[in-house]
Length: 76
Image 1: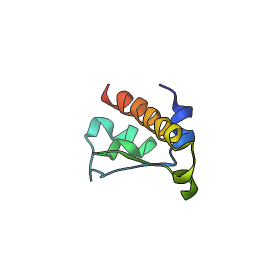
Image 2: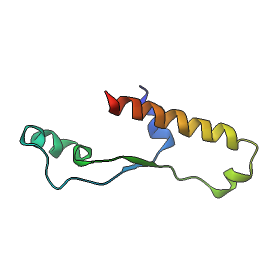
Image 3: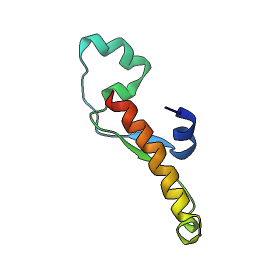
């Protein structure tokens, strides 16, 4: 898994959060708040002109591959 590909593609990780986590994860959740997430989705901010370029297909594939790597990582 390449975190650098993901970080260069997506600006935020969002999702619905739990109000509490299991006590065994409480210390970790203070360091990494994403532990509270029930679900994840990723946000990528780009210029709207990307839709009109010939590179649109490559951009979509880049986003897909970065998200797939993250999804595969989260499934483990």
